[in-house]
Image (tube, rainbow, N blue to C red; front, top):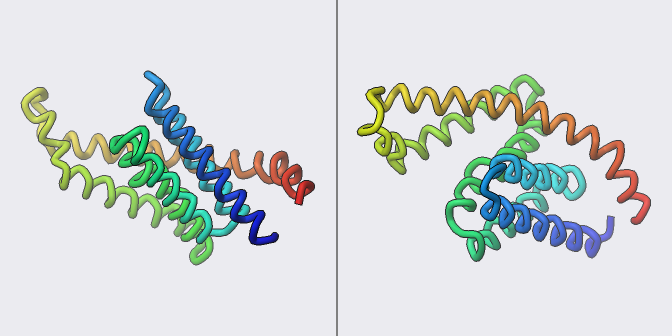
Amino acid sequence: MQTSWKIARAAILSALSWLLLILAASLPTGRLFVLTLASFLLATACQELGLAAAALVYLASSLLALIWPGPLIVLLYALCFGLLPLVIYFFRRHVSPLMTRLLTHVLMTGLVFLIIQLLGIDQLFKGNFPASNLVLTALVLVALQLFLFVYYYALQHFEVFYSQRISPWLRRRD
């Protein structure tokens, strides 16, 4: 693929990701679904352009999202939804599929646990609920594991759909 086509596709994917991030901030419901769609665009960038160009798409869309819609969406996207497909594709290159899943779960769990501890999110609920901070943190981590299982399933189906329907149409245009 020519360099100009790679740059154009990366720019288009960055703009689409940014639009989805704006949409995620604007919609009253469905924020996680729209952020998941934005992360699927990074998976598309990984398949079409490679991991380095996908990292640039991730960086560009995160920086554009700092301008608008703001830091909350950027934190969700940059630390979870945008990082997840890059981590998955990086591990897929170097280790077996089972180890990829295991390492991704461990890495994302550690990242979420670190964010909870650094930002003190568990302290927000301390006065409202009789449960301890440890129980709330454990519930968040269990919810994360469920999300990761569903995300892997959805990503797998998106990859099949993309490779069968969208990619041949794009390749025809090259």
